[in-house]
Length: 529
Image 1 (cartoon, rainbow, N blue to C red):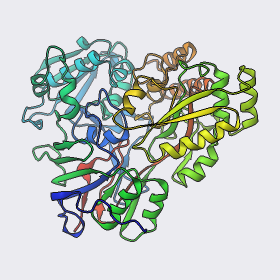
Image 2: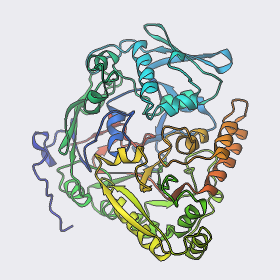
Image 3: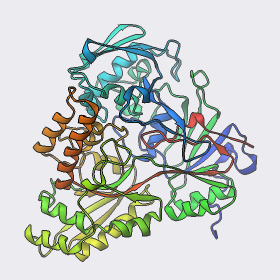
Image 4: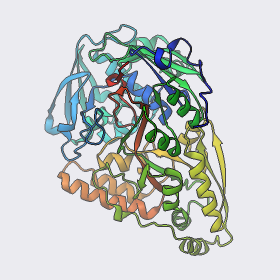
């Protein structure tokens, strides 16, 4: 490769290469997470930590991967919600009152990392926190028709009842997303203050979970260390996992090739090609659900003009980005739904690279001489800069000056959540196959995750009607395709490409898998000496 392992010895006492014991795994990560509080942070540098340090009432069923031998994928047959959801922290549930009441029986004897037993009080406090913070999971409350924290009732120590305003399939779906983690409320409340009643400051860098791993050390800019939660009902194979910060993709590949690390995360497409072509390494490749995309915030004129947004959609060099940047590790995007969502239809995406049409739309909108705007990207994403650079060059050809702003992962989430820039480059998607979720999470005007500022009364009305509980599944899908078409015509985001989910490992690593939210369930992972 011509690149030596520049971080040799940086993993300290965790071991490396042939000396590493099979009970301890080293992961070369792009960065350390800026926060562990899943209500207030977003980005793939946090997904593994949110998922594995915590647990939730239900889970998506995992099945042997049809594409990756020895790996696991999700049973996402979207038309059969009950068969893709399985109990986890809840032993089971009963649905009554015409689908409006869900009564969950909790698994007894499940200890938190601090030793507190999981009870209905933890479920109640977790939901109360969701409503109070109006964070990421508040959208799930709205989608599931949980209108008030009072709708989550403690019946006894191990029984919780959730009352919905109207029936629908979305409660179990949202409970299975990894953002619906349960908090050890006893521990979290011990760190709350009168000015911070929901312990936001403490939970940013501390672990209050029930997951298969518990936090041993978080040193921002250096590493995160997990140790096995051996009292967990489903304990992990590994005793310890260290995520060491190695910012450059080429350096992460070098640590993997040398054997110092057993896993390298988020490699560039060029470096993933290097993994494919090297003995002793393996590239695990799952379909995933991510869309590489860019919100265009209408609060920054002239992006409030649909003709301008459509012009930028026609000015985007989709094929060039797929070939020159993703190098075979992505397919074309097709509007606001990924190909993992029910109702996906590539014909609903009307945009292809057409600079002449882009120029005509800009003239029609009164911007024949162009305009200037800004696109921000996360420096932890190896594709942020090359994709943004391709956009800048293509937009220049139609007279638009695109200034690029590289944001570190410590500030990128806040800027994204608050809509502080006209445009962002963002790789993510909706971690549910349900089209009501997949469209509502980013494009419903009142969604807590509508970071692009898109607001359309027509789209909102369509989503409300399409998500009605009276609709049979085929009707539900059909109506949401109509909503997807409305959103695509409004062009609120650039939908650029559909990358898969890839993990690069030594060839002796086993059990790599994909869980919605673009995380690995590391409790299933091991490796042989």
